[in-house]
Amino acid sequence: MKQVTYLVLIFFAITILSACQNRSEKRAEKFAERMLEKAGGENIDVDVDGESITIKTDEGTIIANTGQKKWPAEIPGNVPKFDFGKIENVSLSDLNDMKIWTMIFEKVPDDVLTKYQSQLKGKGFETHLISGDNVGGMLRGEKGTLNLVVMAGEGNASLSVTLEK
Image 1 (cartoon, helix red, strand yellow):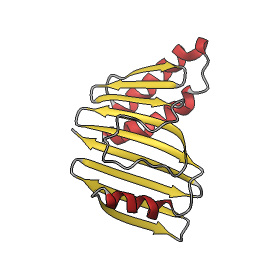
Image 2 (image 1 turned 60 degrees about the horizontal axis):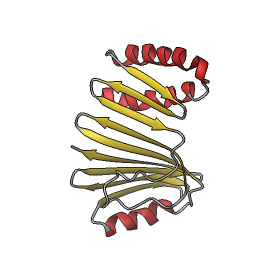
Image 3 (image 1 turned 180 degrees about the horizontal axis):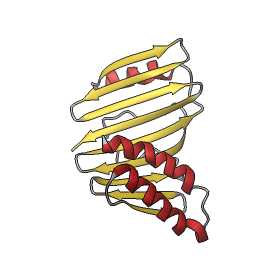
Image 4 (image 1 turned 180 degrees about the vertical axis):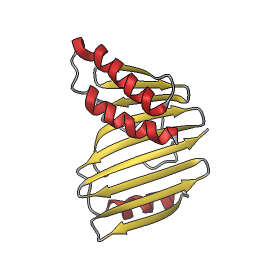
């Protein structure tokens, strides 16, 4: 449950810290550390370096890079590249028992879930599609130690790729 809390809090931290300038970055880092330590109940180190935010905990490291706009090269090769929009944000959670890459996309077509489902099936993934009123929905894919979740709607999408260690 702590891992989910960290993932939610990282996006909150990105919002707070992305507005920081060099002079106030250290104050913002300390504020974010105190906030995350209260929520997580453990020692947390926050480092802001330009467009990159790194959060280190006893469970692992979370890196969010608002400047990275490319598909992460570290994602396993059997995961089909999601070429259906423009990447706006990439984060990596390197935890003790898993790695999670999360990407946010914009300018995504309405039929993205069925198109990506077809690509996943072609790579041997078992898929489950939940769609709502042809406006959006969620797609899950599973193959061995890999799990993917795509949520899409109204021209936006998020993709999380989880690799169990």
